[in-house]
Amino acid sequence: MTAAINLYEAKTQLSSLVERAASGEEIVIAKAGRPLARLVPLKSRLQPRQPGLLKGQIQLGPDFDAPLPENIAKAFRGEDA
Image 1 (spheres, one colour):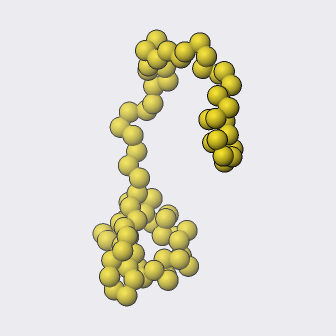
Image 2: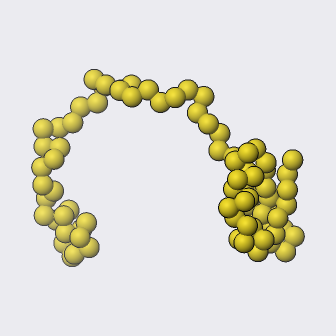
């Protein structure tokens, strides 16, 4: 079932609308009668995550945690290079 809710009402009742969507209801948010967005439940994963799936397939360089070159460090700090 799809429910259409105006934007003002959606702002004032967001918590309850999220609960309704989480329980499976699809909610359309409209402004001046024009649909703008759709609130739907998140789909759960079909299979749970499996830690270590890429173990042995990823390698880090020996300088992985070395300090950055000064010009790059300055860029991160927002300074002129």
